[in-house]
Image 1 (cartoon, one colour):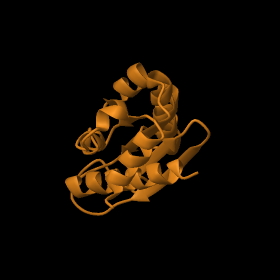
Image 2: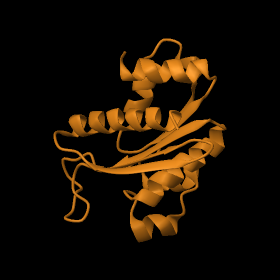
Image 3: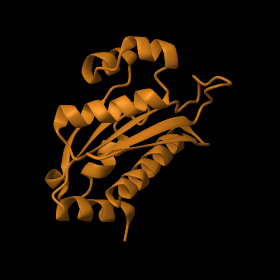
Length: 156
């Protein structure tokens, strides 16, 4: 069974909801989930907060945190997921932030660096990845890993 079909089945069967806060994926994860027939039963909302100002204004990410740690950081991904869950009262939420390239990378934060946080009502799972490939390949890999992390969170 396809990963997204498994996720949809679990969400619908258990009457759970999911929302998203995306940055580097630019709405690709929302697009992926809403392409599943019946997704209106579990998909609450998605915010694409690409600019730091949007992360601060819409998701309540402290400007000081972004200045100190950077928009592409573990604590920002965690807050994106947590604050989206609170905004939309969802059982699960996903926060994704990263550098899709081809520019924008540094030695410490290379192109392909992505942080993904999945929050359930009980716990917060976070992962750091470095993907390789084109901008679109990095975005697709980030979406795939986010779905796998969501499935893992639903199993715990």
